[in-house]
Every structure is written in C-alpha cells, then in structure tokens.
Image (cartoon, rainbow, N blue to C red; front, side, top):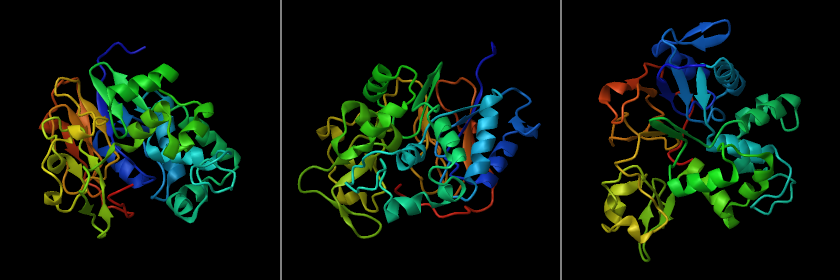
Length: 325
C-alpha cells in the first residue's frame, strides 16, 4: 500500500488515438516495461475519460489504460463516450422512441459517432462485453485528497445525488435504463448526465445567438469553472459573437452552479477547447485541447501553477473533432 503523497499526471480525452497517448506518456517520463507503462518516480497517470470513438485504435488505447490501471500506475474516470457505448450496446428502450431494442438508438447519427469502436467491438461480441464491463468500473468522478477529477461538470449537488445512489460513484448496469431517458431525466439521471456532458442553460426569453454553422440557438454551454465571470457573455462557450448575448447574470438560471474559488482544484476534459491550453482559473482546469495535446503535473498544490501545465509535442491531430460533442 502506498504511503507517499499522491503525484498525478492528469491526461484528458484520448479518443482512440494511441499515438497521442503514447507520445503523451513518453513526454511525461513514463516508460513501457513488460507491456505496462510506469514512471520511475512512481507518479500516477489520471485519465479523464473518453477513451473511445473518433480515432481508429480503440482496442490499443483501452488495453494500455487497463494495464496501467491494473498495475497500480493509473486511475481513470468515465466520459460521456463510455456511457454512450454502454447504452448503445445494452438492450432496452431509448429516448428517441426508435423500436430497435437498444437503450441508445442505432440511428445513422449515433452509429456514425460510434463507428470506429464498432469495427473493433461489434454488438454482442464477447470482447465487447468485457470492455463494457470495464466501463462500469470507471467512476463518474473521483474526489481525492486535495484534488477532484470529473469529465465535464463538478456540481456538489449532483455529486451528492450520485453518492446517495452509489457511494463509490460508479454506475450499475441497473442504472442504465434510467439514464437512457434523457428527455425525462430523474434527479439521479440528470446528475450523471450533467457530470458527463456539462451544463447547458436556456437564455433569457427573447435572446438567441447564431452558432458557427449559422443555426439560431437559445441555449448555451457555460464555463462553470469561472466563478468570477458569471454573466452570459463572460461564461458562454462556443458562441462566435458573445455580444449577441445579454450582459446580465447567469443566476437567472438557478440550476447552474459555478465552482467556488475556495474549493480544491478540479480537472476535467470534454469541451474541445480551441487555441492553446491556458490556466484560466486558480483551481479549475479544462485539459481537452484537440489541436495541442497537454497534461497537468499535479504535486499536491492547492493553487494551479503555470509550470504544471505541460504541452506535449505530438503530430497534428490525426482525426477531426467538432467543437460540440
């Protein structure tokens, strides 16, 4: 049993890109020995979910991460793509009302998003069931001494709702049908879905904006980690022209909780941030930058430091990523 302080190298969404993963580990000082990557200083890799889809090497990524986890060299949480996979492969009803017998409809859109995983893990195959069982071992969040890990959104109310159902933060197979009905979500389902997909808030009546495709939208994603920027213009994500939004407080939507500056550091991925990675809050950091691989080297600090944000020299992104997922 470890007694030394936990030292984490926090790694965001890999999306089946084995080269990006191995280049990240190598740059951070991990070395492959006996089919498992380890660090000479006993550091632990902390993965923020979304191991699958988009890239072509789902099996290789999963195998590497599982081996590290089993060897005590990594910890990992669930992303929304792992949840989507569980629902896509599980028999039951879906929220789209498509009578195909699966909890996530096998529609052209959903199947296309899951295409590369299906090539390696077909529906019903034994190796698919094994991987899906592993997905269920991944907690929705980790609340560790001095640090928190979540895929998309840390809201203490949601975390408490998940804990009341499952104290270890892991989903049970019996939870999945409840999670499949997104449009009629229970309090538990809403807590899980928001934690894995992030908050989206309706703009005040009469307000809308045009997205990058020219579509008019009345709901926005929010930078919930910016406790000091709680107006619609300051908090909105993926809005080409923030001036289209009202310059009024987001507190008009009471269900959005901004992360307090007094809370311990939280790390997350999911948002496919444009541009170069940056520290934009003292205690909260999104690490998902598709065009620039990065990681954060955490050594127990309560306030994040610029030198902890590590840019990884990798090849250009090998697969397309959208701003909204």
